[in-house]
Length: 475
Image (cartoon, rainbow, N blue to C red):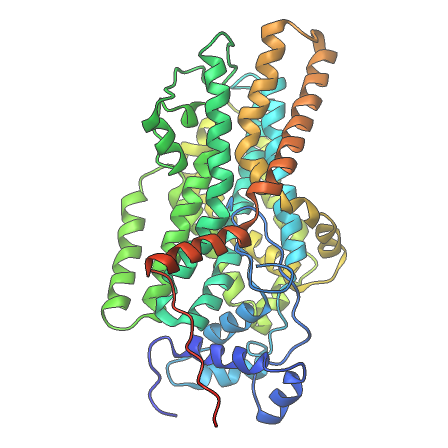
């Protein structure tokens, strides 16, 4: 074989994808032509918080992206590549090229369940636990675990989505990638900031808000702009009232790191150099900030699981029956120490504890891969929860201000005293958060609609991709 150019494995995958979709008999043609892209009918890939929806009849892909089986094959071609040209051919026979695709229904079920865990953990903290108590520590740890799953899951789906975009557009994937991310992330985020400012306005006009810290906050235009751009600072209403958005800010940062890494791989010359420099710069600038290195490790583990998921050894490991119980044990182990003074502080400041959280990305990512390729009891049970992923991102970004309002109104009017009243208020707060999120998601979680709008705006300004010019019919 001749010398392979930078990004060639992704372009090879793109050619496979093009051939694979020419007709409903493409698999027959693939076997005749000796292509390593065969597999069963593609599985639709629903999306959840931070997800990219692929261009399939049902769907199009954290915190908060999903991709279809085609992107999985593109990633498989990348995973099996070697500079001497032998890796891809070997991968085609060892399971890389013949990757069957991922079942995103199970992954969306994980996303939905993780959002519910965050909701309940925050609700329990508001209802029962002082800031520093064993109960609060346990609730904080469950919430942190759910966020860690979000980071790994986002890495998994963003990797497959980027593989698809690079296979389609080469190193010029940036505009499409940015549009997909913006259409998915921004509408629910704007809603969350509006809800936060509405609750904050009540808090400055007679209602004592029961925020976690009780700090004062600002509601001016600058604070609003910083909220919708995720650049909020201490003292902003977003920072004080909707404290769950810290992880969304980090997820958007991870999207940027992933895009730069993809450019470093798929680009050539100056683009490759700029992509690599950008990755190093982003990681260096955030290395000493809260949880950025840990979220990067979790995200990277998920991305690696997706890109290497076509290899037989990786799939075998992900399918081991002991992996799930062992991972659950590792996730639950810190609960043995929730009674120790300073547990909550150690979650965010203890070097060894933070390292442990970063390393959990490896088993979590393998479990996600196991769900994506498996059809066992766990995968089926998770898939049954996938319907709740349709509003889980909205739930994640608005539940804290909504529940804060419910508990604050109860205290303000002196309603439902006692333990029974607290339980009733908790149930009401959870129900209101769920209901508001479900209704709002019908409007704000429509990424395909917002993508069309954004692409049309870009086309109108001449910045978007130009439609292909069709050849005139021959006379």
